[in-house]
Image (cartoon, rainbow, N blue to C red):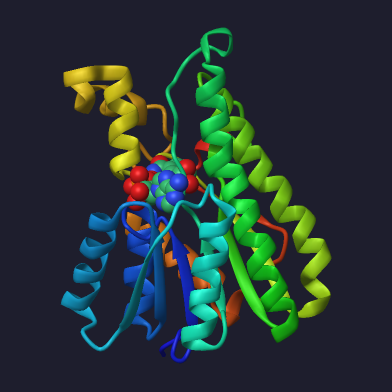
Amino acid sequence: MKRFQDKVVIITGGGSGLGAASALQMAKEGATLVLVDINEEGLEESKQAIMDVAPEATVELVEANVAKEADVKNYIEHTVDKFGKIDAFFNNAGIEGKQNLTEDYGVDEFEKVININLNGVFYGMKHVLAIMKKQGYGSIVNTASVGGIRGVGNQSGYSASKHGVVGLTRNSGVEYGEFGVSIKAIAPGAIMTPMVEGSLKQVGGENWEEAGKEFVSANPMKRFGKPEEVGYLVAFLLSDQANFINGAVIPIDGGQSYKY
Ligand code: NAD
């Protein structure tokens, strides 16, 4: 069964990690993909990885900074001009920011993380929802985090932004359900991507792999999640099978968020 045959899917942060893994999964299931990222090289690598396993896939690349509304409008207009519709939107690009106690958390850093993780998600929803409402169908998955549903520490900007993403998801979920549009968020725990590697390097420096082992020893499943595991979840949530899941925030964290 190809759940994404004839479906047009936009993925932000498609040049790495969770966005790239989700793109690969949906490409295998027939999706026409628009991958958006600020990192052109990452986009090319994602496209190549898709072409290696699904050479018949259609993959459009758009370089954009999700923190700039004009860039967001552009990748959405480009998609509609080229493919005529948007079936699904994985609103996923984000950064972690520097880890620090709140009193030491830089104001500039706070603003930067909010601009990308929260404003970027809002701009995406604002412009995609206008189109999905007209269409009378569509699904959105926003990437929140365990840090968006629990207190993790040392992450003022990240925590505020991801709690904000949960708020946007619930708010718009109740607004757009009647138009046939469903909106959900995922709350990943630690999934081994370049972002988590960077985070471990902040804590453990050269010994980041040791720091990683110590970190996951607190997880009920004693391991990091895999990007492809998130890809399976996102593909399900963006498919027609998950249409009645709306406003929900789904953890994918080995049980971590129930343990804090
Ligand atoms: P990643 O660093 O591997 O990928 C993030 C991608 O987003 C990169 O390709 C990057 O270039 C892109 N990006 C960053 N800023 C951008 C901007 N301003 N405009 C456009 N693209 C931009 O990280 P990841 O782990 O795949 O993270 C994806 C999402 O998942 C993020 O929102 C992150 O907060 C969230 N998340 C990740 C984890 C995890 O453990 N990996 C856990 C919880 C939440």
